[in-house]
Length: 75
Length: 467
Image (tube, rainbow over all chains, first blue to last red; front, side, top):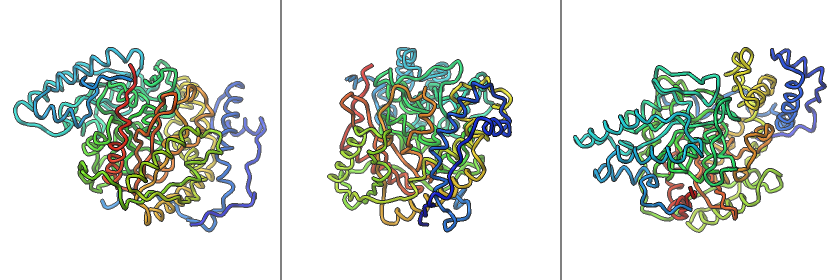
């Protein structure tokens, strides 16, 4: 259950405009240049917040996805 | 501050229900007092999207007849309440504060609506909210104003609910909460906000945002009122697959004024970290005073380390926006013009997270749940400030505020544990600050009793906005 920090093994890459356009296209977004710029800025802000997800080694931690209070417990 | 303690709109649900049961006041008289208050204030505070005046009067007359005939149903019989505008109400427009649902009229009540109706509560109307319960103001909707300072936000997303209760435009209100949308506006507006355990209250007929993070709960003037509303709305519902049948103990007023032997954990490394630029030292100071008060009342306050909290903001953000995007994907791709700019931006970010990020976030969540479960072997409750700052003037209009703001409430949506915000004091500018208390799963009864004792011994609820 202990949290093991990765020593910088995984970090998110920076995204250039062309790569970001490809990511948006894959998601099915049809954006104007202006919309794409503001989305890229917001996405980069969000990626800074989620960077800790890349700094943790979950290999020794809980492998299954579960949720407690479990769904419908004691039904 | 208002000193209108004799006016009906300043009464708590518990006080008003005694007056109704004794027939000292009638439900019609009480409902009319609130409708008058709404008429006077809603144009400046924007708490309501729809006021159901005719329905309210009709329900109040029915309640009056029932009570006169000796059929008193209980605490909520004849009590005027309101619903965040994402709870389905049969025949009444339910918009979720969004152009998408601007003209949507449900054909059935949500389970919560039906249960409040069965308990005899009077529906005053449907309350304003952040667009689709995420952020921003929907196209064609108005932004609720904080009654403590109308230049400031009332938070999100259950902002109309908090404003209505704080300003005396409803005796109680229902809110929904995915990362803090009940407790944050409650803290900003000096009211009580309870997020029950995941599964305690049915979400059937409530617009979803994030299936694994969404909760619904009451927002009230007093802690006892939250207990009364929870009692009416909780319980197993076959229409909600996540609903639990864990029993809820009836709330009792405690004569004891002490907390001797109660152990309260404080994860200072996360909730009291003054080095984070977004954390307001004034809020931390008030929260520390609240801890001192709990200590004076006999509670044992101890610092604890929950390492996974360091990852909670990241996990909550990925899960909320990914699941939110899944809910809205079709409309975003086909009708983006029906979304406000900020709403669309946030949801589109959710569509760009990777599957590995979502899975990592859910695995972090499992670890967080385990670490809290371990802590609850030694402690009865957790305490912290409800939010990192007092109500700002620009939260709603700044996109990055949603992603970057640390969420002191989010960990309890991730874990599904019950948490409550109670008024804890005011800054020098007169802005309210909330204390967040949390308990183990399905321990709402104990949580409400702790909050009740704290509330009774501090009385911050008595201070009301000057309107």
